[in-house]
Length: 356
Image 1 (cartoon, helix red, strand yellow):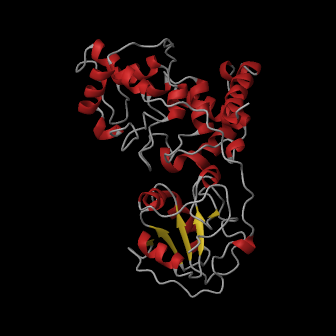
Image 2 (tube, rainbow, N blue to C red; image 1 turned 90 degrees about the horizontal axis):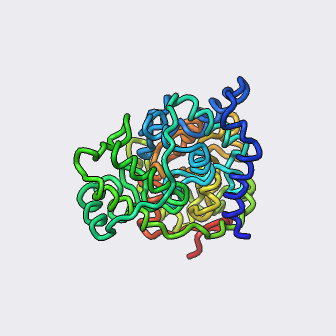
Image 3 (cartoon, rainbow, N blue to C red; image 1 turned 30 degrees about the horizontal axis):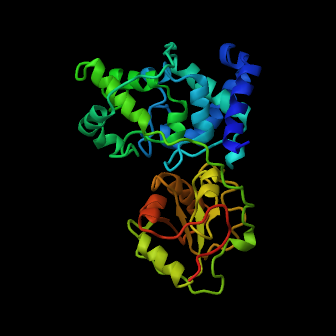
């Protein structure tokens, strides 16, 4: 069976087998564990107080309209599987993330509990609408924030297959009608008729392209002996912006010149497995200061970090390294998406350098 479908099945099996997780009060241990995990893995983007927009336009997880309509399974699946091709990574261990199923459900339950939102039972049936009219209305009202193809700009990606796999039509419609409090997403109940709302909902649903691709096989992590690229090469020269940010073209030029350096991927480990700059070492933003330089034995070799934010996660790791005496450190200014948009090479699940 396709691995992704197996994971989804496990989610629902786990939920129904341990249904008390959803209804019973969280234990003190659960709350402490979830609080730690939220601050460690989620606060960077969603904010320490769950208000959102700390980085990557991450949504508010304290929004009543969001948390009252997002079921526990939907929320848990969002944490587990993430949003492919966005800054929201998969956190489940099966995808290379740091959390197991129990930890994810506990975190999701805690988020629901902390929001203090009364659950609204939305229907799960399909909503019929005029796709042509929905596309036109989407172009008028939604493109600026959600993108021409629903890819997400300053708001969530609506065409994301992982999102559409769990978001019901009624969930989408409710968001359009009522908006999201504590965010820039306004409610359109006074702007659109119900038919127009149905048309947009149907159009967004039509963006779903399925979600059945098997995840790439998880590769072994590089060893310290593989950390340094071109160990016999010369030191690179970067014109750092604000004493910290290396222009993407200069990093690529240094790689082509086979300069000596270490590349750090500071996103979640699941994102490294999905795609990374060739030769990059996964040291995620949630690593402790004690372990951030584990395997890094030379404080003189240049260390270049990157993330998708494009700075938040990599800044966090570089700050820790500089605190420990690593002065030759920098962040790729344009981030990982800038690297991709520039057409520079990436690898998935492999440990190898760029070949000239």
